Length: 397
Ligand SMILES: [Zn+2]
Image (cartoon, rainbow, N blue to C red):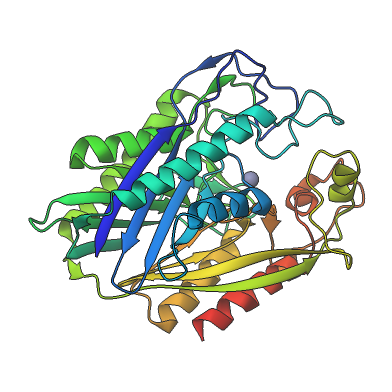
């Protein structure tokens, strides 16, 4: 396999107002604590080329994803077009790229100029990673291990997915070329009063992995929905650093002790899904032009899931924030189907909000005071969970 990697800083300029995403509206950034990135990892075999692209952003909708993918694929012939996956990490210390967190509930928080620049940078970064895919990686390591005590489930404390999935591509001398880490926890250590732009615990994680290995690290968020959140007290950068460094150290130790395998298989299978939107709050947001209305004439939204196999490591990609109960069920099914190391990549090629098990879905009577059922108010419908799971299970059969 040939490996290529590229990254570009996407930290917004504070010359114009930057509305920070993830908590209340009208939270304006005041300074930059650490940079945000787009990172791209290109993996090529004779048969296939797949690019994994990670954005340090709250979410990136399918029309934006498709625009970027088409622009990249325009540079290739029909036979050499790469498969591209663009996933957001969902940090709550970055700019609004979706529209929900502007100055008030009638004004989008997205800066169109920033979004346009971001898309240009994402296209360029993916193309650079593809052009750089000349380094031979005859072997890889992959591990899946529990790292307890860092994340908690604020909705259902008894359901916890604390598995870290980590991969390392090695060069011909056995040295790391690129590391890939995947963990299910909202990057929101800094919480709602923070006004400093940051990649949260993920920034510290990547930095620690890169310092130890001398090679780049790309991170993805696992099944962090409803509500996998950092188990912290002070919401400080020191706590974000501890979480990032603990994950880095645990993953690298496990990789150190793992045996390496030749990368024999690189495969991607895609399945389109259609789900009817029922959430009244999304309808309000469409009417107010806070969110792009992507419904077809039947009121359905089209999105996709993917099953990506990289040797013994399999990744299920999900177009939103899967709840950990479904994430754990999915990983169990992936193991049963032959995955040695399963991982879930959420917010992949879309961000359609929380994806809940149907049996737990109760839309609150008053969605503005949702109590224990907040996730339902940020979900397109009760049907979404079963549709996503069925599509994934179909790919696994
Ligand atoms: Zn979330």
